[in-house]
Amino acid sequence: MAVNIHFDAVPDLNHAARYEIFSLLDRHFTGVDEHVFAADLATKTHVLRIFDARGQLAGFSTLEYRRRTMQGESGALVYSGDTIVDPAAWVDTNLGPAWVAAILGLHAEAGPLWWLVLTSGVRTYRYLTVCVRRYAPAPIDRLDEQAASLLSEFASERFGPEFNADAGVVRFTKPQRLREHLADIPDHIRSDPAVHVFLTMNPHHTAGDELVSLCRLDPSNLTAVGLLALRRGRRSAITPKAKAATAVTATA
Image (cartoon, rainbow, N blue to C red; front, side, top):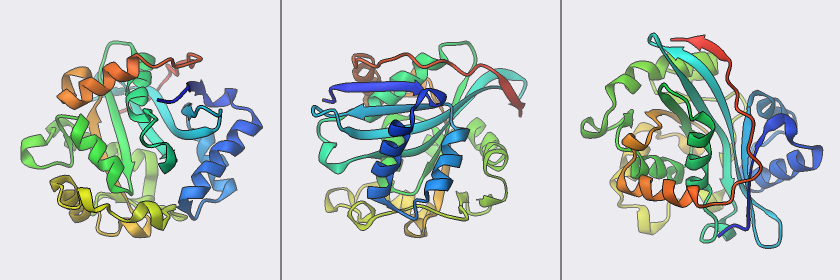
């Protein structure tokens, strides 16, 4: 298990922390541009970082959390941005559980919390399908129809012309692509139905296409695995407490 988990507001990160995050991302993705990375990080509100026993950064996830009104109801939208865990730390880190616990702790207010997530790799998509009961896009037995009705509007608002509504993907002008050691699909998950669904919906993921998904992030919408992850994340020592972003920035 990771020794330290930090959840910070982005403005609180110093130059060394920002460079450490950039360097970890660059080791596992191609097409990472320092100026694009800095501009993207400036749009985020928080970052979750996990450190190993040596005090080295083992993984991180950036995110943007905004209060807003959706279909007449006050709530919030969280968009998860750059995310990576060093493969050497996969067994010992708990980024996913810590992320869910941190976000729900940050929200801690009335109203729905929606999670807008981009996936260019099958591992992140599998995490969504294993931990969340209903989402969009999804097979009919897992489909959240409200999420489906909100997805295109949220994605268009957030990504503009880089969002292709017909394909359901974001095609960035300067895409980041997983390096070969992470882009390959491991044999032990190749037959997983979720892998087939992901490859069908995002056939050009190796070129950097990012599949857009949306789900309600709430304990009632978590599977048994998701609830177990939430409990595990809440047991983590997450420090310091990040400041919440509370401004309502848009309506839908």
